[in-house]
Image (cartoon, rainbow, N blue to C red; front, side):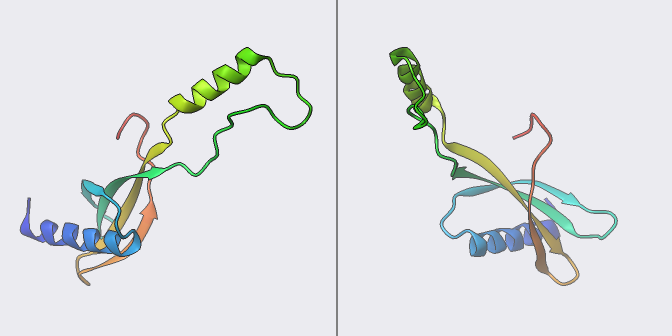
Length: 111
């Protein structure tokens, strides 16, 4: 790895740690944006999904069989509440600092 790029990765790590203290993460891709000359460093981390998982029947008077309640609670136990998330840190090499941290969705099938 080029020595300058190592410095940009270190800047991206420091910026991510400021915004998300205590999170375990790993650096993925390092790309240069040809139009601006900035480096885009992809950071991957795990975060617990904040959406509640339905485990029982609705309170609207719905009639539910015993089998459907068992299958819902079993499905809720099997669902992994952790999701891999991505951020992209944009580093300006002339200024030597991070100029943006953005959400990033990689192309389908990449992780």
